[in-house]
Figure: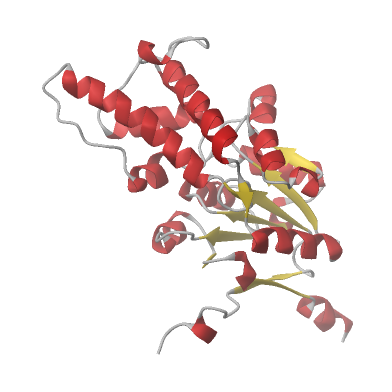
Length: 265
């Protein structure tokens, strides 16, 4: 028999005796924007690959959900362009910051993806995941510090569109990463910067991520607990890349004072 009680089972707990902070990824964890990103990336890469096929002997193979999860999700825009195209044996020139899409450069393609994303965000908006928002508020009520990270330079606009801009006092996004010269995931730099701004060492902090590159970054950064959120069908991949535990939804994450109670006994 399936469903019911098994789906509501608590998968993991955050013990206040062990952890002082929780750092959340934005896209796909707090905000429901993964579909918007996926649509923008697919439009970009399908147009690019179709054009190459029309002007060469290459066959057209469209960009897939699996490509998004493996090569793009959670990464800086230009890293995503490089990573996916490398998987197809394509190594475009870097180009310059103001390159148009037709230049076929990393920066030109990245600019096009950003334009597509902003167009889709304006027309569709962004939502938030209620259980994620509830967990953040429960953590804050328990005086566990929280922060949000994102590879996107559009994080502020996304959070505002989803109605959760004021939920986090600490935000390390693509703008901050560019200002500080922080490398993108799977490098843990953005998570470490967020922990530093919270005044918490990594081993006393939790990372919550839905991207394979993100859980790898959390594990590489020495964070005490890396929670993978599997909103699709990639729990094995998330564990393989570094998640200590994988949940289907953040309603499965609970808080406890168990460690503190033991210390008081």
